[in-house]
Amino acid sequence: MTSADSTSFDVLILGGGSGGYACALRSAELGLTVGLIDKDKLGGTCLHRGCIPTKALLHAAEVADSSRESAHFGVNTTLQGIDMPKVNEYRDGVVGRLYKGLQGLVKSRDVNFIEGEGKLVGPNSIEVNGTVYTGKNVVLATGSYAKSIPGLEITGKIMTSDQALDLDYVPSSVIVLGGGVIGVEFASVWKSFGSDVTIVEGLPHLVPNEDEACSKALERAYRKRGINFILGTKFASATQDANGVHVTLEDGKTLDADLLLVAIGRGPSTDGMGYEAQGVAMERGWVLVDDRLRTNVPNVYAVGDITPGLQLAHRGFQHGIFVAEEIAGMNPIMIEDINIPKVTYCEPEVASVGMTEAQAKAQYGEDVVAYEYNLGGNGKSQILGTAGFIKLVQKKDGPVIGIHMVGSRVGEQIGEAQLIVNWEATPDDVAALIHAHPTQNEAMGEAHLALAGKPLHAHA
Ligand SMILES: Cc1cc2nc3c(=O)[nH]c(=O)nc-3n(C[C@H](O)[C@H](O)[C@H](O)COP(=O)(O)OP(=O)(O)OC[C@H]3O[C@@H](n4cnc5c(N)ncnc54)[C@H](O)[C@@H]3O)c2cc1C
Image 1 (cartoon, rainbow, N blue to C red):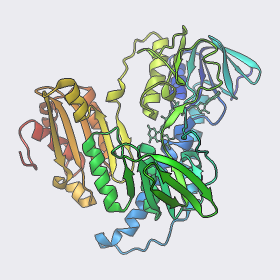
Image 2 (image 1 turned 90 degrees about the vertical axis):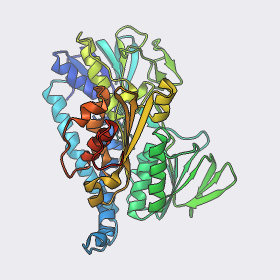
Image 3 (image 1 turned 30 degrees about the vertical axis):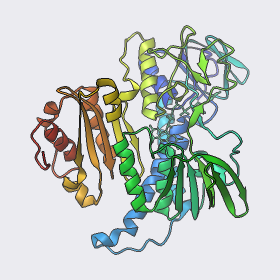
Image 4 (image 1 turned 45 degrees about the vertical axis):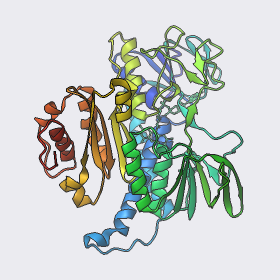
């Protein structure tokens, strides 16, 4: 795919993950010449080591749960076991097809894909394998890596999501360090596959960045599923031997398991890439940008996980598209982090957009109304046998500024939720619209009907 003769472009992008390739595709669409550099596979973390492979595992986990629980629906099946190599084959098939499609897209839009490790060697130039490429505009998009705790070496049975995705067996027991998105998703998969799982989280709740009501509902659901968790307790140390891993917590408690998954967050991949040497302003490894995603160096932008904020693929897509349009002089609009939709794809799912009740109250004091519609009143949720709710946070007499959901498949409702919040719709605006029966989406309508003062399948 490399175009050997061209070394100068309108837009030169370092990193072909969600942020970088979105920027490449949109720039090319706008008639700009594009060089896209990656040392690994086009598609980055999301496609090869993140969103897609984990969601394939979560789907296989859902199939396992359905088989195990099928007698409840009068369908008698026996779950004979989990064939991990076969699960991985299915997952790799999904990733492989998307990878092929993405390669085709990049090629068809005449993006010059340059394979190799790049280093910023001037304010508008990047060196790859001894060749210096230049861009009128340079976009830094080198993403993130799985962090560990100082002194806790990632090796053998102590692993991050990168190695956990490559396992060809189901561990009989796992300790998951970190109750954030990645931690609770892996915990969910392993529990469905039959492992004994314990999550250790230093903060007082699982998914601590969510509205507290969602965290508590997930904790109730995990308790019911038999997923163990220890909250508000910090990790102290871990060792491993032929029998497995042995973890000690700061309160002196010890835990043993086959594996330890370290899921304590992701740091920016910026080390040794020449950013600091070229004068790019950084803070603890993150590349600092202004509200137009410009670094302090003229015509050098940064997108995606290397910028401080939410680490999500669709934030990367937005950043990439934004920068392409900004370069093309289109004055695009940016959705701020708080209003970016978030989904945690564990069972049950957690999905949210906008302010939590606590954030809204911190900003608007008592001028905040919160309402929870319980999925117990929703026909489709009853059919699926899931519990949960849709919680709305409204600025009093004004728009809905936060939507927070828990329940099987509620991630599918995030599309309408983000439209409501970003369109600044009021409960009356939404209550006037129709939600098809019987869908889980009706719960979204019911919640707004109730907040508009005209509840249907809910108590006032
Ligand atoms: C287990 C897991 C599950 C996730 N699930 C979800 C999810 O469900 N939904 C969601 O929205 N997000 C999810 N994410 C987060 C998502 O993957 C990231 O937010 C997204 O990939 C960030 O995109 P990016 O372009 O900033 O970086 P990346 O995707 O990390 O891409 C960076 C690219 O830069 C390349 N690169 C780095 N340094 C160099 C160099 N010096 N030279 C050349 N190339 C270089 C890398 O090879 C890589 O391809 C998940 C992440 C993980 C780890």
